[in-house]
Length: 340
Image (cartoon, rainbow, N blue to C red; front, side, top):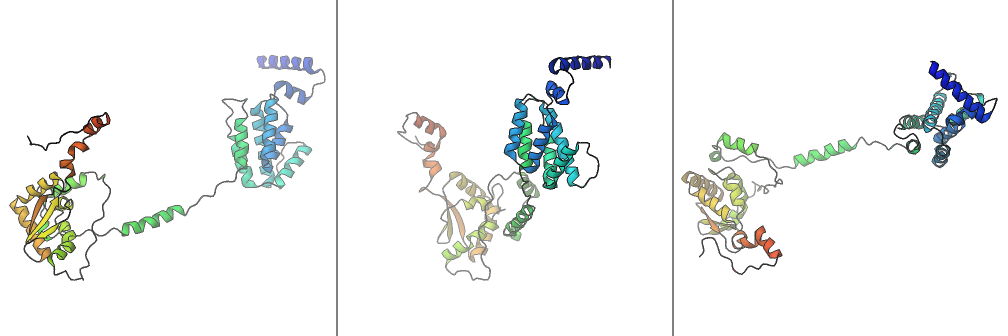
């Protein structure tokens, strides 16, 4: 307490030396850099009237005069609070002079309660702690309080939910495999469920209308029944499922009593051949095909040589060869694996 009294006496002596006697309140505020309530009241009226340009000019004037902007923030916030109380119909004594109270009532008469609420929140939350000499927080609070709030749309989630429902309904139901294909192991099914599916979902071929009669011509019947055959074979196979393997075959055709499935990739051809070497798998495949075709047919695989890109153009597709070609190298000869 003794130290505070001594500081007050020193400030009083400085004020008397600077301004003489008697001292005025404005002189003390000017010496302490507090500024007057007139600037704060002026800024508060600009905030209520949403006159952003004049309000920014007032903040700049106060900042250039060297006044304490934190004191300006507190005074403006208090004036805005008083305007809100008057607008709300409060009869409490505000503690201001009659002249100031008259100006506050005039400002409240043309104000909006929602705008006053936004302005008080903006100015009271302006952060002046890091740099009390910067007018930026007060300028941002002024501009932010003058902006109308954006309307919040509550119908968007409902529309998204309604749009998602038809998308789920459009997915075709999964067909059940024939009885002869239901003896696959449960461990294999669990392994397939654990594998992450990072590939884009592929739509299954459209189902044939069962009310339409099947064509009598074997080639036309094969074309119609081939999607059903692939569905029935999707779980057939000891190591590789023949349904997905046969989907890679291009240009499936009839050759007498044989169904020829051309493969452009040697790996797919080897997988098909390995599965068909299994007598149990071969019997199951024959039963499915004969039931779909209405006659006895044998399916055979064939390695196509017309578009065997990975076999004939393997060198061109190698990233090492492409890198060498970019450096100026040329391919002068290609040899198949095992060729002397």
